[in-house]
Amino acid sequence: MNERSMQHSDKGILKTIHARHSVRAYASTPLDSATIQTLLDASMQAPTAMHEEPWAFVVVQDHALLQHLSDLAKPIFIEEVRHRNAQGASHSFEHFIRPDFNIFHGAPALIIICAKPMSPFVAADCWLAAENLMLAASAIGLGSCVIGSAVAALNIHKVKTELGIPDEYSAIAPVVVGVPSGETPATSKKEPLILSWKK
Image 1 (cartoon, rainbow, N blue to C red):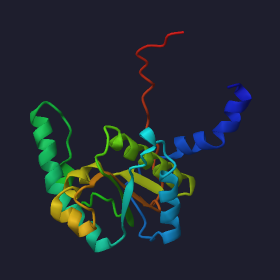
Image 2 (image 1 turned 180 degrees about the vertical axis):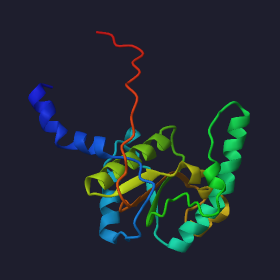
Image 3 (image 1 turned 45 degrees about the vertical axis):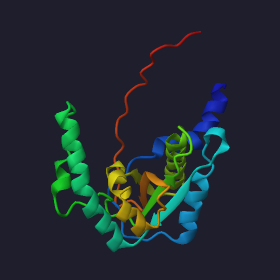
Image 4 (image 1 turned 135 degrees about the horizontal axis):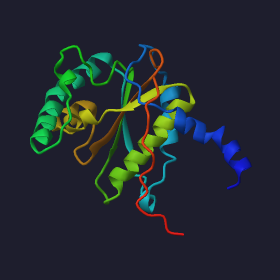
């Protein structure tokens, strides 16, 4: 690719990629169905191993349900963190203990990407779909954030039943989306760690 092509590309997808940040503060502005559908359609354009397209989606916009899910997920995640720290990890998530902390950051919508465990690549497919969804959100002026701390709770049988997730599906990639509340500062990224470059 020549320099002219790079400059042209930077005005499109590369600009969107670099503009995407994890947003952890949202306005209460609800998202309409057409906007949600736009994000789902974008996620469906992700690459998928063996063209399986394993994705299935759960959309949660009920504020009370989001609060309920947050309250369920926090103690489970705290226990996971403590277990990992006991094995040598050193992450601190003490803010999860605060009663007023909501793991969904006040976002008006949670989109859970689910799948059946059909092949070893299903989880990767779901995360590729999640990245497409987040890039699409950024492109239309919305914020997004992966909520990995919710995964364990979302896969509890009673929670899956409450959300309408069949037993044969697993919740893999939970992503919140919404209108950002204020500016989200950019975070610094490491330089690529290139282990080998053979020419």
